Image (tube, rainbow over all chains, first blue to last red; front, side):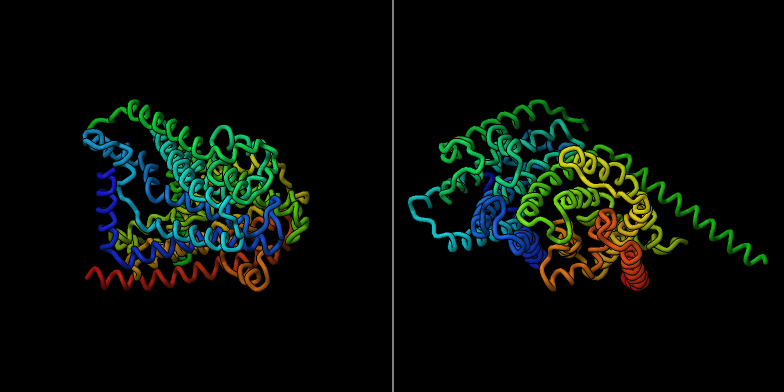
Length: 261
Length: 275
């Protein structure tokens, strides 16, 4: 942990050496993420509800998912560069250092401008909450779901990274799950097909990033009629997925064969 | 007579040169078929997610923007299919790298104009990515959700022309963005800006037909709509063919002309820098 902080601080200082570029990239990230909000705005310009949810509710789901995902992306998203490290041979160097490989890969070329997206998502979440008026008896779930969401997103990054030990040539496949998961959770899951929702509830637990706990915060019935107690399972789902991710990453590293010099 | 004959020879020589460059572009990308397959997979997954959102919207508002639900789903998978050939997320040109390393000086003194040289390679790239990254999402979309195909046979050749023009417009825009580095020094800022403009105003995120009021009018007049929205509308039969193709041809000509002007300016710039 201490090494991780030291490494990301080093890369942050490196990025700060180019202040103009850094500012542009941060703003660019904000604007690029803001496009998703523009899309939601245009959708709600044409309709009043989407999948049974109105604009502030969708903004709440978008903001909470976006916050979880972008914090995970900021801190650990570089794990998807593992295939580049394998190809370039720099992964060998990481293996002989006395720090965990995941920490090293995640911290390498740490890009602090991704914080712009987290900020943007936080603003959307704050605006949504201001319009939703959630009582404290349900609001306590919000920090729980954001933290669980960060753990789930990080685990998916790690799983995507681990998969690249097998698919060195096709790192884009992992994007379908990492960025795909981020896109999926932006909207109420009620817009998706029932089979897809069951898949992201019971197999890859994306529904626990914001959907199930979000239903509790919004005090809504599950449009798909899944059990009520699922709403409280986010921390458990996050812990379970994290364990799987750790196991996958370790077996990926164990399976790794250096290409030699 | 001999001069004409010589000119004819020179021109046919150029043509075969460009044809070869198209072939090289195709083969270069065909080497990385794994990356293309992964890209096709990702494009398909995102197509499915987008399709569900559009279906939910069109269920709430049937007939929105002149599309029915099937049209909207078709639009979704068609536009996902354009991501590869039209290189909607930007890049795809080697000149960015070559400007940074200075190799561009060599390219500028070649006997064929840089812009046509790059365009030929890019057409080859687009040709390969059409096979590798456009067909799979379309087929999966058709199997999972069902999409509409043109009932009028005349639409197919028009769509082929419209698709090709879309690639040329995409190239024209990316070429300008790439050359802009000669003046801006850093490519990342403008790359992000280009990404934002292209994804939003091309119709990739939502059909431009449902953009409200003036924003919609503006979006439909900009070159990015000629990249994605217009070829999709030609396929769906929602646009008059001569008007759509004329609009695309106009933007293609404008962007290529701008690119040629920038190339001339860049040539002077490079000479100054290179000393």
